[in-house]
Image 1 (cartoon, rainbow over the protein chains, first blue to last red):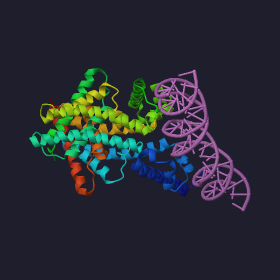
Image 2 (cartoon, chains in turn brown, green, purple, yellow):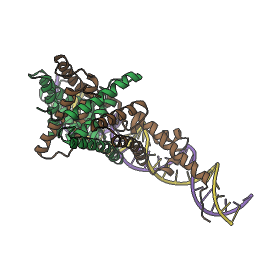
Image 3 (cartoon, helix red, strand yellow):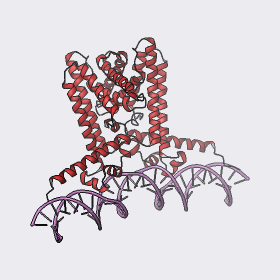
Amino acid sequence: MAYQRSEKMEQRLAANRERILGAARKLVSKGGLREARMGTVASEAGLSTGALYRYFPSKADLFVDVLNAAVDHEILILDKIVEGPGSARDHLRNAVASFVRRALRGPNLAYAFIAEPTEADVDAARMLCRKQFGEVFKRIIRTGIANHEFPEQDVDASAACIVGAFTEALVGPIAPSTRGTKTQDRLIDAVSSFCVAAVVGAGTGA
Amino acid sequence: MAYQRSEKMEQRLAANRERILGAARKLVSKGGLREARMGTVASEAGLSTGALYRYFPSKADLFVDVLNAAVDHEILILDKIVEGPGSARDHLRNAVASFVRRALRGPNLAYAFIAEPTEADVDAARMLCRKQFGEVFKRIIRTGIANHEFPEQDVDASAACIVGAFTEALVGPIAPSTRGTKTQDRLIDAVSSFCVAAVVGAGTGA
DNA sequence: CAAAATAGTGAATGAGGCTTCACTTTTTGG
DNA sequence: CCAAAAAGTGAAGCCTCATTCACTATTTTG
C-alpha cells in the first residue's frame, strides 16, 4: 500500500518548513541575500543543507517565498487602512506611518530586500555618495528654513526622502516607462513638484 | 640608468586608464556590479584581464573609482545650482529636476549603483512587491483627486516618490539613526508629513 | 518485525569569476 | 643593437557557495 503521512508527521514537516522560512527571514533581514547562506539557514533551522532542498527547489525559490509572505502581510495591513474611515489624506498619512513604524520596530525585512548590499568597500562608497547628495539637499532646506521660505522640519528626514523619491521614480517599477522627451519632461516636472511641495508644506501635519 | 616613461608612454597609460574606467562605467550602468565582469571590462577596453590589475588593485577599487568620478561630477553641477541665483525653492526644484533629467538622458550610472540587481527571479519578485506598495498609494491618491482633496498630478510618479521616500528614510545613509522610541516617533512623523505635504501640494509648481 | 517508502545528512561536486603568475612583447637607456 | 625594465597576456589557481547524491535514520505498512 502507498505510503501515507500521519497527522503528526504532516505537522512536523510543516513546522520544519516554517522554521526554514523563519531562519531565512531572519538572516536576510540582517545581511541581505548575499550573506544568507543556505548552510546558515539550514543550521539556524536545525536541519542539514540537503534537507532544505526537500522543502524548496532552490535558494531563489526559498527567498521569493520569504519576500512574498512578508509583503503580503504588509499589504494586508495597508489595505485595511485604506478601507477604513477617514479622508484620503488620513489614509495616506496612516499608511506611510504604519509602514515606517513597523519597519523600525522589528526585523521586518521588506526594506532589507530593497537595499541589497554588495561588497563592503563598494557599499561604503555608495553610502558616501548618497550622503553627499543628501548634504546638498540639507543645505538647500536649511537655507530655506532660515529664510522662512520653508517651515521648520526634520532636515535629515526630508533630505533622505528627497533622495529616495527621485531615485525610486527613476529606477523603480512604478516609474512610468520613459520613452519620448514628452514623457520625460512630464516626469521631471512631477518629481520636482513633488519634492518642492513636500518641503514647502512639511509640518502641514496631522 | 633607471627606466623613465616617455611622454608618449605616459599618455598611452593614461588613455588606457580612461578606457578602463569608461568600459566599467558603461557596463555597470547596464547591469550593475554583478554583471560587470572584470573580463568583460578588459575586452571592452581592449586589454587583457591581467592588465587591469596594473591600473587598479581590485575590482572593488576600480568600481569605487567609477562611482566617485560619476558622483563628483553630479555634485559639482548641483553645487553650482545651489550657489546660483534664486530662492531656496528654486534651488530645490532645479537640483531635483537637473538630476532627474541627466539620469534619464544617458547611461549616467549614479542610479544604477543605487538599485543593485541580484538574481533574476528574486529581483522580479522584489519588483512586484514594490509595485504592490505603489498600487496602494496610487489608489489613495486617485481617491483623493476624485474627492478634490488633492490636486491633479501624475499618480504613478507620486506613488513612486512616496515609496522611494520612506524606503530611503528607513535604510539610507542620511536616515537619522533611530534609537529610542522618541526618535522613531519623530521620524515617523517627519516622513509621513513629508509625503502628505507632497501629495496635497503637488502641482504647486514652477 | 521486515520491507518499502520517505526524510535527513553532510561531504563531494561544479560553476562562476576574481586574482595571480610564468611568460611574451614593448619600451627605455647606452 | 643589446640588456634591463615595464607593460601586457591569458590560462591556471583558488575561493566561495549552491546544489547534488550516496548513504543513514525514521516512518509507514502488512
